[in-house]
Length: 131
Image (tube, rainbow, N blue to C red):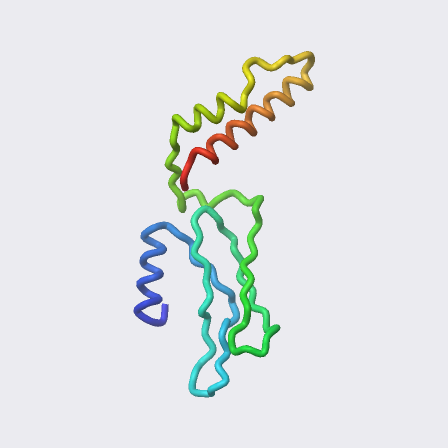
């Protein structure tokens, strides 16, 4: 990083295992020749990796809008996050979403019920946890 504030931000992010993402192009292009183009916009994330930042020179302003793009289907950057789960809430959510023993008539039903149970477990853990 080029300055003390940037160095402090970088240290904070690495200490907390956050990811810093920024566009490769400057986000501000000053009209005054004394100032250099610089990047003012960045993203700090926990649990999301492969974030791409894009600037768009669409306005007459000296600041270009930034768009951060990421895939929602990618696996999280695992070492970034810690989950704190309320296990009582998890149990309550799972109890109300799984209606006892399902009726299974054939092997296709087994696969369907396993898929539904897995989905209910993931949903309950996500709703009862803070990351």
